[in-house]
Length: 224
Image (cartoon, helix red, strand yellow):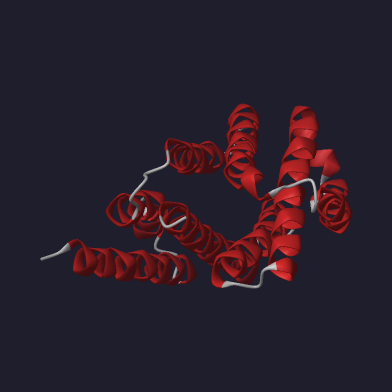
């Protein structure tokens, strides 16, 4: 069996896992939900190892930091929430470093302008839950800055070069905002299964779309 067939199998497993995670969450089978929750990033890591020709250490570190953040958030104590917040911020910082090459002197001003609406939306979301954030408030502000920067880069690059690579990045950046908004609402205001399903789906698709961006970016670099 060649790598292409293996990658297709792992890709199917990734979305099957996402479906089963969602399903067992809906039917409230906690043990199975936890299993499918935990293996989501490891499956994506395996998919990346199989399909990538460069195997970026920075991207691997980003995925591991996201996994770490998820584990910290899972425990739900004030201390682990801060650790999770810090890990999540470092995850976003890694993504920023991965797309920094898309910023040039020619598009920097446009990216700075496109950054603003993302940042305003994110700050509004933070303000909505500010009383619950405690000592993690300023870390979330940094997270907002990094996420908004990703959004600004994604929009401007897609406008100027509407190819598949920048399309995947744009979808990913939008879903990162949706994911964190749904996460905050579900955690601090309304424990609602519908909102939690939004978290599951936005997380799953945003990670996949960024992975697709990474693969296309690496292929582009290899052929340039």
